[in-house]
Length: 371
Image (cartoon, rainbow, N blue to C red; front, side):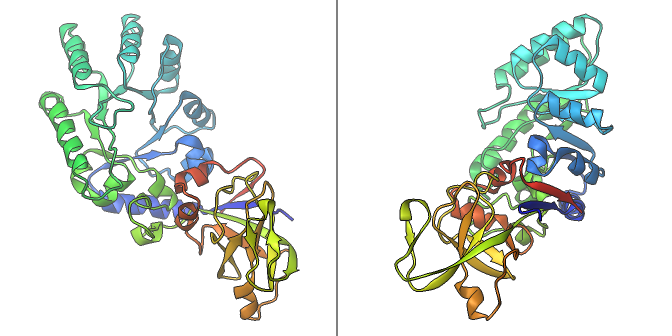
């Protein structure tokens, strides 16, 4: 029996992509599948999201893997590359690096002096202050291209919101206006340059930011991007379907007395006589170690709470609610940790983290199944 399983619903992926297109029908879709497609499996997700206009990954090795596996769709490298060899690799594989700093641009200039031509995007910093060209650096690059009579080879401009998950935050409008000030002088003479700003949260809540291309990430996997700012909001509220269902099984039950304490540190003690179930999953599988007592799991379609500390291989759950319904508990009964029937946002809130982290930290000993 496979104990811990991550079931990936590929039909949910296509549903969520259709929802993205419904929200921004005039925009092309750059599906973000970095970090092993948010932990879901890079190749399988790319194949399921074939109706995207582009893919985006963070790093060159992710893009190389997709090409090796036969994926031919245009791929953006969000972190770009830093060496002549890497630019040559991008040319060979028809990848599109994103330029976000002057060092990358100067290296690209060296590459172009060797009579090489390569499509690329520029990324501008409009307030995130992480990656991206400052206004002065952007102006410098444009000036260099014009002085050298170099054709505008870059295909697109992008920036990134810092507070898009906070609906109505004035920083969002400020960033969009800053981005518009940068691109408007360029597109008059270069209308083919694509513009991209909107991530999942902006796709859902800020239609003015959709522009030519949108970059959905976490929403493709059925997760609400607003979970940190709107308590209780889940992907289902956004008409999205969960893609990953993480499940395991009961491997033991124990009858405990009032006052008996459970797990390391004896941090949780039984308030009454009760039955607990031992579930074969823990932080060794990627389940969050900091999930609090009370974090929900699903068994026989009933939400029951985790009790005690999460161990490397096991968690303990309170079966009181199941017993009240006179439902027998057997070794091997399935327990859903998140996914279909139990939104991952509920788990992340109880673990003081975000759903992104839970999805990305699933370990190699979990068995993946694709439907």
